[in-house]
Length: 256
Image 1 (cartoon, rainbow, N blue to C red):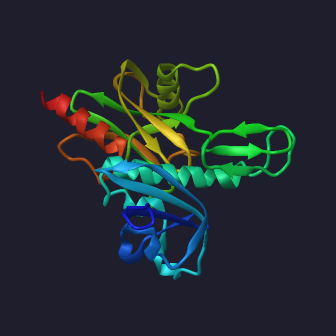
Image 2: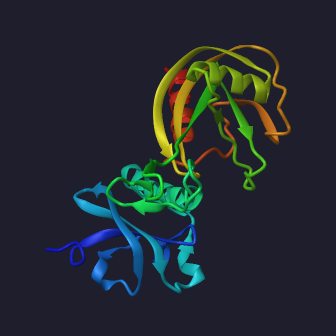
């Protein structure tokens, strides 16, 4: 059976958003689509079903069928969400790396190399991924949580930030916590990572213990930061996020 005839997860990108009819990721043969795309790429498989990215879709899809990747965060299993996120990150590459970084000529998407290709100077430009750390800080049965200006629902989460040049991941953890909350931490240990397509990051998760200081939020970055009793947490990051897994792991450690 050809790819056009077998059912696939369709990740159609239209002006930076995904086509989500009925608020779901469609799974159907490509032959049933009413539109075409300039480039098509299989980014992986989920339970044996191909996950296909369609870029530059020639479509006039209804606006109410287009949505951001975050709408799928709580709906998709983590492995499938990561593959859809890869499609979104490749779309970001196509937009942000559309011109060669060496000679300035327009570059094209090379599906085989999964990179931008400059025919003028024969240079590949691969997707840019920014490393970030994210850390849950615990003091006994208290958990440090912060709120960002973008959190309009009152949600709290753990501390995160971008790794700087020449910095180890552990140094970044200590610096970000200090800069954003005024606290010092110790016993920094790695837990797990998660690709984070907002827009092109990889989040490396850590646990850490409180070492000293008073909470003094950086109000240029945060709207609030404080200690919370683990038995009385505020609304926190949703399931499916590495932030939530770090919070859950910290609570489990406190109860052990």
